[in-house]
Length: 220
Ligand SMILES: N[C@@H](CCC(=O)N[C@@H](CS)C(=O)NCC(=O)O)C(=O)O
Image 1 (spheres, rainbow, N blue to C red):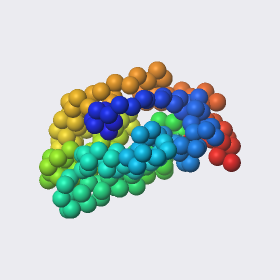
Image 2 (image 1 turned 120 degrees about the vertical axis):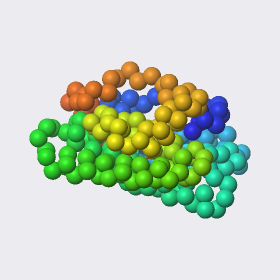
Image 3 (image 1 turned 30 degrees about the horizontal axis):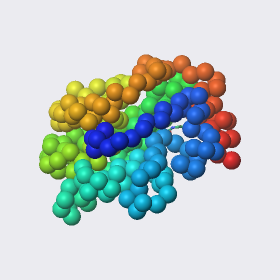
Image 4 (image 1 turned 60 degrees about the vertical axis):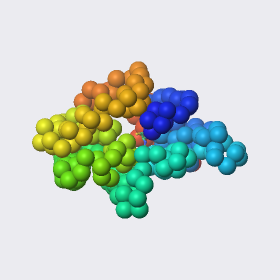
């Protein structure tokens, strides 16, 4: 969103495997201790720096600050963008996230959660496919915050062995979004850890930071 809007910003990488996000200092910015989060050092009201957490809330905050950017102007269109954004936040993102967890990270052989979350991931791809057969973008004619929120999980679907071949409308949409200069700038950020393999090997420490004792202790 920041790259799309071409607004000055400083990106601060957090290494989740090293537990960078588990500190008290970061919880001042995001009480939920998760990524992403932003701090606006030049809020519109001219007041103190303003932290914002939850990616959907960040997208809406930045849109409002920048004159309704990447949100439809009409009431119905705006509601549709909000509906599909909430759908991503409450459904597509969490379900794909759990599918990644059980297919790629959890100990192997857990048939039920793998089936449950893969089926949900597929069901949600089907919902998106039907929507994108009706309209060029999720909220309608134009690219919006809903597409920004959803595209990264679609891009990651191959890692949970869900190729996009059965979804022609999603493929068309995904390729168009991938060509946007703002998206290309926004995804240039390097990731030194290679988590693209099907089953990334986590050290005990990294596992604890992401899913175990260190994660729990940090929130107490
Ligand atoms: N609903 C949140 C989800 C945030 C989230 O789960 N972020 C992941 C990274 S994609 C995270 O911070 N994981 C850290 C951890 O699991 O300890 C949002 O959309 O911002």
